Length: 139
Image (cartoon, rainbow, N blue to C red; front, side, top):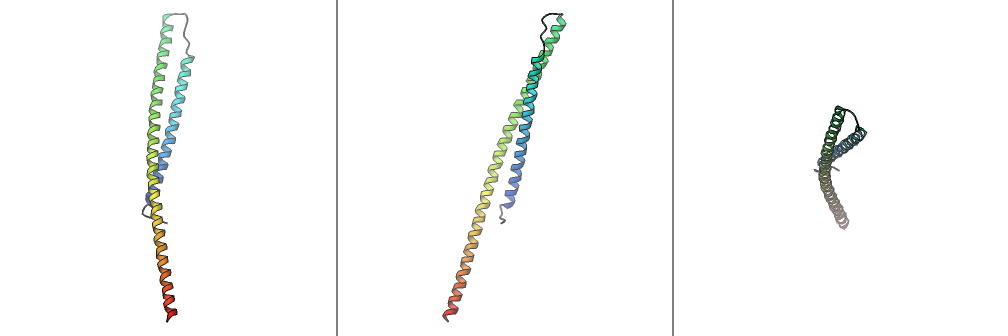
């Protein structure tokens, strides 16, 4: 049964599904960023600290450690950004779901009104038919 809310309900359903897809994508991106961070930490732990040797070897080792720390900070920042995008996607999905349910409720109420009106019209029609039958029998 179509009401004036039917198209809105379909639109809101599509909108909600798009928000679900964005949330799924944001969660995947967050997972990938966390994996990159874990790999960066593993890489940091694999770097060797020289115990002896020339100063250039120590400087290279120190440079490697500082570069890896920068990579880790960059990946930490990416994880933070991805977490905020997941939060935004969750909020958008929540708002979209509320809108969808609101219009779905309005559509259901409209359908109830239509059914009630149809039943009243049918009842009036049956009463009129019964009255006509009663009048024709009375004559």
